[in-house]
Length: 605
Image (cartoon, rainbow, N blue to C red; front, side):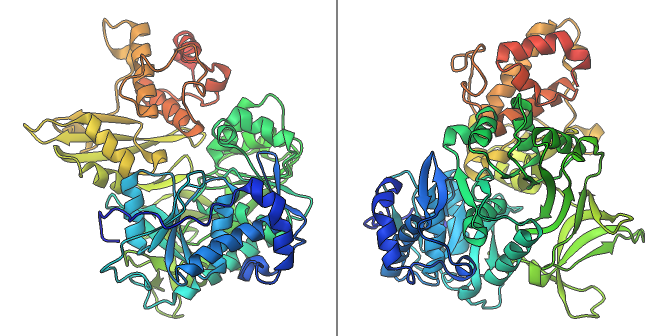
């Protein structure tokens, strides 16, 4: 597919076997073809009873036999179009169809390129970057497999920069943030993915009695651990409906209802569920913090929310391509934790080292991961691995860009980033990518993206753009382009348009003045304006006055957990004080939240 080309029309859809139909017919069909429908490689190591339940989706039980049949349907379509060894796009979502598509592509020898919930331009960029020859539509849409125009595309069978790597050794492609305003594909090798998965479940064992929640953001590498857990461990995967997955209040109740025992979530998500639940979830025995730095504040919240659970701080990156280090906190111990929370030691499949910084501090430096535990490379040919700088052992390493410190007990803790890469509530982004996307808009002469984060790890991105004088800058167009090119989770919570960057702050945008510093300004009116502007930004709306009832609950008004976090973070920045995200659950409407802030602004943090 050439850059900017639209996909061709859909091929006849033979993949749309619905779960309801499958549960009536698939088990007998899968039982009679157990050998041919066995999952490949990693997922086929431990035979599973085809009559056992593998997934529960919206209270519907789906057996291993059902999943085998659904996956075989996918494999049949892939083989019919001769897509073995080719890259196929798969929109990620929480559904049995998504699981079946991944397993079916693996079975047919194709490579899934896992697409997020993105705008059309970002999806096109991702498919082009991988040389995908086909893509699936959304699992709930009538369209199935679409063949793409790949004329002139020389990356169909070989990724740039991988020295002719055999596509048969590729497991899948994930996407991360680059520095050009376009998604950057990470080509994950089968050997590294399988080794990391086996090591993870060895460190944190699960069995047939476990109930695993599919709550990680689909398309992110933690979600793949949830996806494969039934086949590797015998556990049952529970998939919530969309409304439940978007609302932490419903999510907490859902965990209790289904007696979930294993949960993965970002530190922000864990805090949201803890803050919205009046009662702990006693069924949880393992809670994995993933996707971002775990703060002591978030750890204490998780420990109170899951008092009987071990809390595992899981460290890794999409390039590694799964968890590299784990630090386990026994039940009850997390409530007294302090920063920094350790990231622990390397798992058995990985070799890591700390490369000291220039100041010679040998206990602190950049964390490097040896090549065997890393992805194969990037789709754009950017080098992922570098030789040992001493050249003594001939091994190659991935520089994570994370500055870590060795602790007295031999474990490690995260200190800071060495670059402009940030984690926005569990989603990784290069600030350069946001600035690159802004540069695509006519009238933008320059831009600076900054990141702010509170003590609980809740963060947001702010963007300051400089207009090209005398060119008029269309703010609506700017926001539309950002939504189309960026992951929704990292779209700036606020955008400021200026004629120049302030000179008294090193070229960085100045922090907004506190609301109460403006003389002769009505405090209540100013606060209400801040709340409305922040809500507008978080929801991506032009105007919210006629679209949101200030007495409606936040989730009823269209907020999701992520947009609500952007809202709180932006209000914190505008007011110049730290506001706990848990307050939006105690005061769950715009009016109630405003009244609380009006009465408690001096000590709101």
